[in-house]
Length: 303
Ligand code: NAD
Ligand code: MG
Image (cartoon, rainbow, N blue to C red; front, top):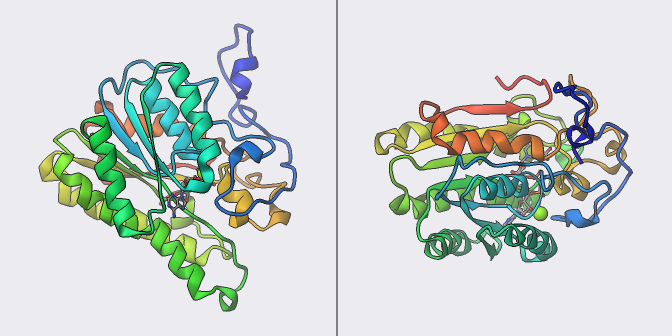
């Protein structure tokens, strides 16, 4: 839970160093992609804290990797801002998708679940078609699904992992944008999830960092290409954020306890802290913002 909610005094300022979880994380490990229901502590996606104010009223959004972590925080925020939401995820993550659906349906928000492995081109394309069909159109495409497996030495990086990382993090963006374009009207917004790893790469994330640089390049080039259609394209570059990605091989297990503590703000981020940037980039408040990669990194530089 956000420390903001604990604060019932008249003090309105929240110290960003202490706004969320600051202790060491318990060592833990799951098989990828993992289920965040089984994490300790469970990541905070704003379930209890995010309040909307109609900034996305009537919009229709597809969010890949929307069951957990950053995508889940985006789904909650978009729904509470008035958007109808569809989420993509892997079938093994049904538990997280179900808790999200229950939460949003109890609030009378619209959410559609689209399980499938988007490394398959047809699954990628079909998920866009089905989102548009079920929601009755598409205005916001959040390309957020991703995988990360730490490998200490390049000699140990298998071709299988190399393929999997690129096939998950990079290829589906191309197919999904191709499929979505006929639905997207002027005012629509495409948002990708890059990473601090595109700017300050870690030596144990060679393949992952390369895909995150690719995402930043794709975003900037696509923004130029689609400007004359009135479609904006931006990216968010998170720093270390407490999500299933990290406890399923994204970090070596021995690095989990101190995960995020080397940022200038001294802690890992929580998914809830990313959501408002995705809301901003999807809403007309950012009408002059395109081709940008916006860092949410706890103080690390993203240029
Ligand atoms: P997460 O594990 O909660 O979310 C990633 C999601 O990607 C999964 O829930 C899964 O549904 C989806 N996914 C993975 N492989 C897939 C496949 N083959 N088919 C369909 N869906 C698939 O972790 P997260 O940290 O919220 O990750 C979201 C995005 O944020 C990723 O792109 C990740 O690279 C990026 N990111 C995360 C961090 C961090 O520290 N957590 C930092 C920078 C960038
Ligand atoms: Mg997940």
